[in-house]
Image (tube, rainbow, N blue to C red; front, top):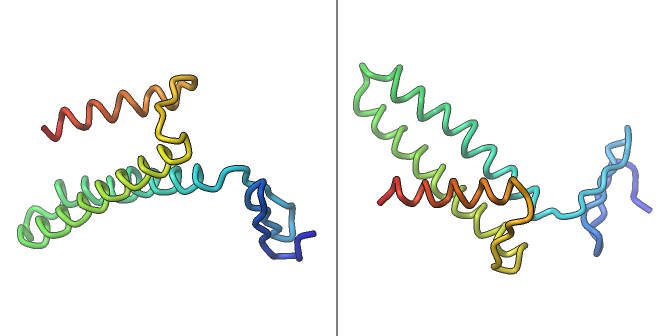
Length: 114
């Protein structure tokens, strides 16, 4: 039994009761992967665009903010990749379109960095 407004962690996953309706998250590491990727490629990608486009007059701050946000994107993406690889027991999953697209974007990203 989950206390109202509480959280219970068991073998199945997280069970969260917010008072309105209970939620069960079957695989919390996949949520961590999703949150990290969302923050990296939504919030910090907007910061990248903003600094590249609108901070032209403040060159020093533009470079600093752009570099820091790019580093955060890279760090969150690498952590999210390791989280999902650990969930999949270090095997590449080709059974879902999201996994296949993730592999394709990983290869394209590595080619871009090289």
